[in-house]
Length: 289
Length: 289
Image 1 (cartoon, rainbow over the protein chains, first blue to last red):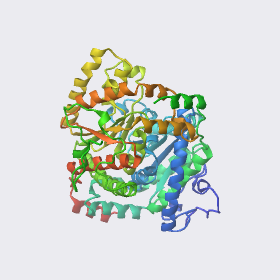
Image 2 (image 1 turned 45 degrees about the vertical axis):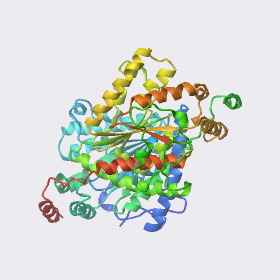
Image 3 (image 1 turned 180 degrees about the vertical axis):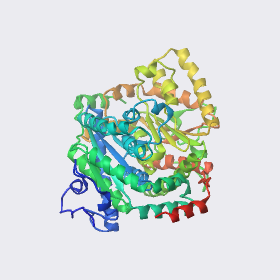
Image 4 (image 1 turned 120 degrees about the vertical axis):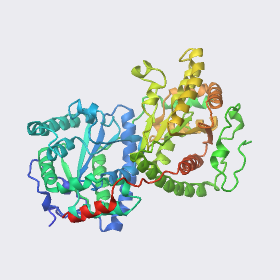
């Protein structure tokens, strides 16, 4: 029973996938195999993703070019989701369509000793995209209200205060020209089991497997609850969450490409004019041997 | 009069493009439009680059996977060349074929105030690839014996000492598991003029133009001399320079893809076995709902 309504022609995908800010989230109500808004089945989706990727790359170049001329705007894609939900695959297949020079990718692991000596947003601030860049967070500051909550890595009162701090942090980013695109990759427990088994069975996938993933998996309900809280509490008009059904890889790649495209189109970055006298430069250049 | 000999079937491209360590370099003797070792003309080159890119991506995944299991090996691609020689284009088209997660790209600009307070290798050390990664330097520590020499940015004695320091630095990298692939993109002054004019004439390219490029261009002979010195003095069996003719973009992309492939094949990274009991993990997983 997918809650996602059907997408009308030319309707923005983000209007379909956005979780309404402030509303209670019930993840069980969303079908992880759904393909809301898709242009058809897998083949049509793959073709449209490739087309979308080329458009993305053109807009990315403009964003970057504008950044060289003082435009402070940038994009930050935040990827969250359970193990195997496809955060790494999104970087490979969606971000892989862009010019790597303009991408700043950061995968957040368990905090190091140095990182733990600072507040939880310290390491996040250091990984933000510069003007003109597209930043990608594979996990993020949300881990500090997800695994931290499930695994009791901080006192409840401290975790409770983090939702508000994340709110303020993201508002300050938005005010500073950062377009936030926060995607929750929604995978079903059945699909996760299939993917974990595949990692075990295929020698070229085994390196991705960690026995600790099985223990995490046992905490599935607690994680879903932590996600539901985070998605509901840390949503705002300038920083909404998108729920991306992620049991089908082609749909996940299509949807995230499309969400990025819609945001970049709205930004509509322009090639800068150049502050120099083109005719004079041309003449000087032609005079040289 | 290209000095590059013809490549025999299955002969390594690196044997063709390598500048012999210790020998005097005369850049004027190399044809920047040459296509040594290419599998044919432009169409054949583009097709082979795409094929090579897929192979590269597979080897890159193995390198990364091995890195997660303690293999310290990594690759560092150093790109040097005059303005418009195609350093940025190489990142876009060659590195763009790889998984961006495993790439660490650093474009070196004029040093910041903080960077100038340290020795010239300080900022370079901070940008090195981690085990399993492919690092890409768009410009590098070589600027400190190139523009620094041409523009007299340091005392001659200091610049003179840097060649030896670079030697020692690169040897220490090689001993630490870094495979250095240093490419000099050899562009002709005629082609540079064409490319600069194109940047001026096309509104979507103008943002890449800087009037200061014309002044730099006037110093062409001094730069060539500085390059000849650097290429001859900072070459070693474990860190040779490759001279890549760069007037034809398709050839440049093909040759650098190919050089990376040859080095990665030699490294022959392997998927790690995994240190856990696969059968036991499988059983535990299947017991879960």
